[in-house]
Amino acid sequence: MGEKSEIKCLQRFVFIYGAPASGKSTLGRALAERLGVGFVDLDERIVAEAGVSIPEIFKTRGEAAFRDLESKVFRDVISDPKVVSLGGGTLLRDENRALCEENGIVFCLDTPSDEELARRIGAAPGSRPLGDKAKERAAHYASFPNRVAAFFDAQSSLVVVGRGIAPAILAGRNVVADETVARLWSCRLGVSPFAIIPSGEEHKTPVTVAKLWRAFAERGLGRKDTVVALGGGVTGDLTGFAAATWMRGISWINVPTTLLSMVDASTGGKTGCDLPDGKNLAGAFHFPRLVVIDTDFLETLSAKLIADGRAEMIKHEAIGGKGFHLRQGYGGQAGVSAKEIAENLMVKVGIVREDPLETLGRRILLNCGHTVAHAIEKATGYRVSHGEAVAIGCVEEAKIAVRRGLAPTSWPEEFAARFAAAGLPTSLPVGLSLKEIVPLMRGDKKREGGVVTFALPCGWGDVRGVKIDLSKEIL
Ligand SMILES: NC(=O)c1ccc[n+]([C@@H]2O[C@H](COP(=O)([O-])OP(=O)(O)OC[C@H]3O[C@@H](n4cnc5c(N)ncnc54)[C@H](O)[C@@H]3O)[C@@H](O)[C@H]2O)c1
Ligand SMILES: [Zn+2]
Image (cartoon, rainbow, N blue to C red; front, side, top):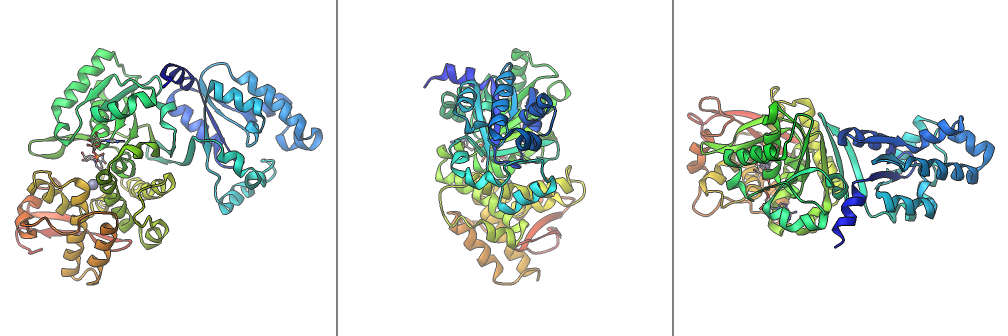
């Protein structure tokens, strides 16, 4: 593939396009700020040039004159690398589209629902000409392959979810990847990571963190530099932790490549590594400045890794509630859409917003099923993957909820069916009983003496923090 020209072109411009009121200016401004590059809003430039508002130009001079002015301003803007948010019809002209595609990459925002669009246009009447044209131009907008399905703030992170958007973000940056992701994706992305770490949880250790520090030193990274993690939860946690501790904290961007890291590990600010004494024992809260979730990465994931991600998605459904659960329904399909990921991630983001540093007892809800899951992982020497352990852990914890009178007896079966439909196991591995793994739960890092706080799933939208003294009580 033409790697060289791809790098060159991607290092130049990101054009944000889409229907009127789809959020182009907001996303463009936020993205430019997070990437540390310049930003231009084409409509603002046109207004400055014309000295009157856009509706006024349409009214007094007509659409053709507006498009001429737009093309002129657009050509002036193409000078140095930046993010440009375009007008809702700028690329209807072939000449403008060709200029964009020669000079960079176009991110096209999905058109919001009719309701949402009406709300946004209604909020600023008259300020957006052609607001009703979104439908008419549906085929035009759909012809842009690089899509943004959603974007939102999560603490100090800007999260952008879409398809085909990662290459433009990665080009020319300080990228860390694991061996597997580097092998599968470097060429396709046109990216050469400056640090490549070994793949797998067994390498989520202080040794790998020290390797990253070494690589940062050799790269000459200073306080103002930004590193980018390209990989699953292990790469994200390690790179984020190395960034948190390098020169007392440099900024980082997270580009998650597994479903699990997209819907869970990518946001929430937890970074760290494992120690012989336990998982994630050394760590820091360090929120990435930007999280770019690109569903193209799902193409190379095995069915097992997809199922691992789905386990966390179903956990979020349990936390998010029945309305949320019913809206989802991927019913065993292999594909997961950007919209679905964004909606699912919002459950975690909502909770993290309420309790960013896990000091208020809200964030514990995200630990649903995890007290049992971590014990299963330990008991089986990590042969049961995290996602599988979460599925089993959620069902076992649902049974604990029933035994404590907190959930209806039908609940564990209903919950289990959801995991089973996603290809996940729902019962403890043969030869392992809940009783046997209780001592391992006591070793969980969230314990206080013999007391462990479980986040017990009691129904859709009903996960409760429950303290259980494992030295006295029977599960
Ligand atoms: N920070 C948090 O809030 C948080 C939340 C949940 C989980 N985690 C952590 O995340 C880790 C688990 O995440 P994970 O499952 O992504 O693990 P991982 O990073 O080890 O990835 C799993 C495997 O998939 C490979 N891989 C990654 N992207 C791929 C792709 N696109 N195609 C093919 N293979 C690919 C990796 O090389 C690895 O072998 C655990 O260490 C867990 O503690 C952190
Ligand atoms: Zn988990």
